[in-house]
Length: 373
Ligand SMILES: [Zn+2]
Image (cartoon, rainbow, N blue to C red; front, side, top):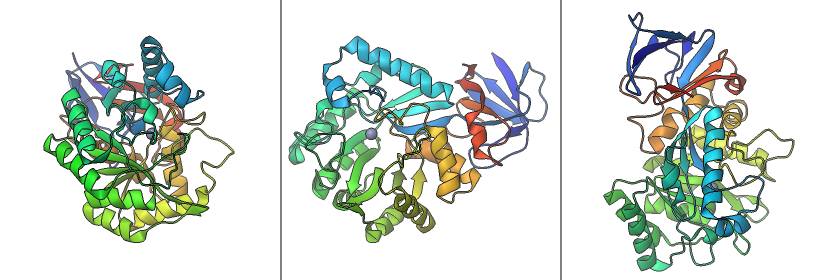
């Protein structure tokens, strides 16, 4: 079916482009034009945006549960039902693409059609007993990591996720500690890139971030530069990140709470603001599932925070979770923009988020592959 959408304003993923009719055909955007002899869905005083892209979620996690207990023990049908419910929650918030960066048994491959388009990493590659070992992705040494990445490529993943440092939700694991050497990470990158798949790493501490940047990964999740007692950014590593065009997925989005996101959140915001000034490509993402404030509709709150606290212009904040996020995920030709040829994944919000990002919270319509959901 061919039809057109009319909105008072259109943000194309980078800038506001007035109010063209957006012509939809076969799940894609066919054209932007002033008039059309077609059925028109008039959405009124809304802004039409590309559907949001949350590049870091865990569909299998229960925000109110304990991952280390639930993930290894829950029956497969329980897991799949939770994944579908979480995906539906994301879609309601206008998130039309999610990238799952850690499941069990590659279950995300079974929920690709759960609402948003789901990109899959499968179980994150981690050391024996390392961060999120309970997801089943343990691999050690050069041979181990090569085998693990090859397995993921054969399974048909969209991205390879590696735990470059420990993490805080895994007992016995420390976020400061590096888990893999530069050489091991480089071996993973070579195999993944040969298959056309990006590599992203979980990294909190400076040495793990440095190893990943040296290895040439595509993006760093978190990149907080956590150190005992606070944050200690290695600006030389940040400089290398800029030169190599490596993205940082901040995982800062969360539901509003009086509690700071981290014990050092003011410093964290200042650091991310400085990284942005230096030219690091920051993507707003959520890490949805890993705690009670990490709900599956968290992303819009993170975009608001990018504008209010990180010094982003409102257009730039919106781009960080649409066009920039899509490009980081390898979907830059298909998602994150309102332009001919792109998937008709669209979000309409009341008012104008370019004037006030809080408008993102008033969702009026969500379209996925041209269908109103
Ligand atoms: Zn995560």
